[in-house]
Each structure stands twice: as structure tokens, then as C-alpha cells.
Length: 332
Image (cartoon, rainbow, N blue to C red):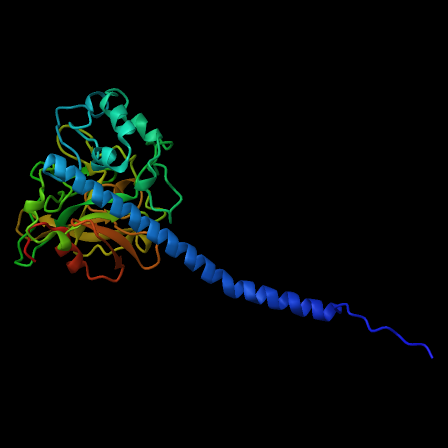
């Protein structure tokens, strides 16, 4: 009587079942892996902002003021006369010695010509890891230069709780540029044109006042290189703040990811009524005094406070709260 040995091999059906189960497990695991990676990137982003907050404190210890968005002098030509502590260089350039980039700061001090070429050098702490686009994304603005995703908070734009308009930079005029009308620039915050904001000036409290925020969402399209502060198109007025932005009443976090433009009240008109501007949220025209704080993080963006702490704010946060947190001495 012939005995047949029992086969230990998988049948084709069994093999297909095993492969299907493995595929199902991978499909279930992949979102968890992606979520874990994004959580790590978000934490790294908050660490970058915390480092910049600490650097701002160290800068304040030395200079008794927070770093300026830039120093504005309409008599100086941007290309020929730019120097580190004169016109146009950003708050980021002033923080270089305090984020272990003293070598680059020395190069800035000793490079009066073509100072923006130093933005060919990358400073990783200036970028959110959730956005891999680190180069300038303004058309025609030396796209090989490195930009930054972290901006100073210049203050609030619009009406305060009493119904009066927040004070703005007296040198800024309403000017036409980049195909849109640009309104006034905030100076009630912490990183402003001309600087001279000390911790003693922040009477609302360091824990209640924004210092920096993210503009790191993809397709923003208005990042200048990290060295640029104020951008001046002509001696008649400032046309853009390149390293600090204001916060407006109806300009929520991540607005630019959903809309092309917003109608925003920036100032009072000649007849005493609200003067409404259509503010672009993407592309070259977005890079002026009011801009869209937001990120590629799910549901919101990180902000650094004047005490150096970092907090995540949802894109459903009431914009009234955001502008209250944007002023240093509004008493809101």
C-alpha cells in the first residue's frame, strides 16, 4: 500500500490571503507612521522657534531691546548702501551670533557689497521641517537664495476694543505696488521697523504677547531671502515688511490655504469710515505688512511668545484673540 507524504507548502490561495493580510496591516500602519513623522516635524519646528525666542532674549540682554524688523532710511539705496545695522536687514540677521552662526554674522559685517548673496548660505533654524521648500519663491527674486518660515509679529491692524484704530508706523503710506494697494504697517508688536522695543515696553506681559509666528505653508509664494528686512521700492514709502507681519481682525491662521484674497479693514478713510483693502494671500502681492500666518502642520501653526515659550494655535482660533496677543501694550 503506497503512502503519500503530506505537503507542508502554502497553496496559492493561502499565499494570496497572507499577502492580502500583510497589505491590509501596512495600509493601517502607514497613517500612524505618517502622523508620527509629522508630530516629530512639528516638535522640531517648535524647537526652532524656541531657539529663536532664546536668541531674542540674549540679544535683549546685550542691546536692551528686541531685534528690529529692519532699520528704515529712505535715503539709502537697498543694493548699494545696505549694512547690518542700517537699512533693510532682517531681525534674523541680528540674531545670528545667538544661534551659533557668528561666522555668518561676521561675513555680513565685512561684506558691504552684495550682502544678500550671503543668503546663499542655509541656516536650518530658520525653517519649518514640514515644508521642504526652503528657497525664495518670489518670481524674479534670486530663487537660489534661502528664505525663512519664521516672521516677527509687528502688531495689530484694525480697530482696538475701544473702537479706535491701532496706531501704525507713521512713515508708511498707502501705496500701489505689486498690483495691489498696500495699507499701513503695524508697530504695536514686538518686532517692528526701527526696533527699540524692550521687555519693559511689553506691559501686556511677556506670556501674553507674540514675538514670532510661522508663515510656512506651501504655495505662500512671497518668501524673501532670510537677510531681507524692509523692502523699499522708492523713497516715497515702505512697500513691504519682509521679516515681520501684522495681525488683522478677519485674517485667520491658514487663511491663505483656503482663499486667494480677503477684504480687510486696515485704516480709517478720509470720511471717517473704514477703509477696506483687498489683500492677496498668495504670490508676490502677499509679501507686505499683513500676511497669512499658517503652516503645513495639521490644523494650525506655532507661535513664540515674548517670554520664549512656544504654543500651537488652531486655525479656528478667534482672530480677535490673535490681534490682542499681537500688541505689547494694548491692555486688551
